[in-house]
Length: 154
Image (cartoon, rainbow, N blue to C red):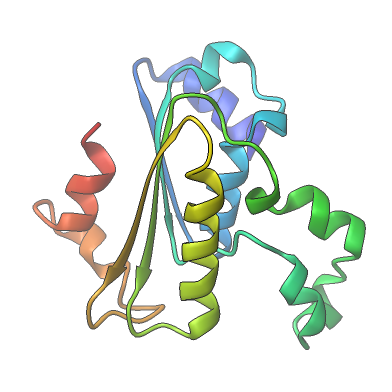
């Protein structure tokens, strides 16, 4: 993800807005951490990260059947969980989740926004009424949707 961001930033000038859904929400939030080792010339351009139903804390996954496939150990969960790391300075982060999602996705969204809200980060947590883990991204197809306008407005 870091290398993809670097290549893209070389080819496209201007402010950077990142979004990702579920595991992708985790990945874009991880890019917004100070210890992500992204060049300052790029981190200074990241204006907004919008995580949609993100998994920001990998520690609970270790207690699920999914970890039989993922093999996340304690060290990796601690190192790769954005909720446990300091965000970039002057970052805007929006945590977006469907109000009808599983409690764990809503909890992770609230916890991550609460943690990053303690730094120099403009944080907004939003629960999209009537949306679940799969329907919450549908608004990305509508140019005038609240989700897309929130993503692109700085």
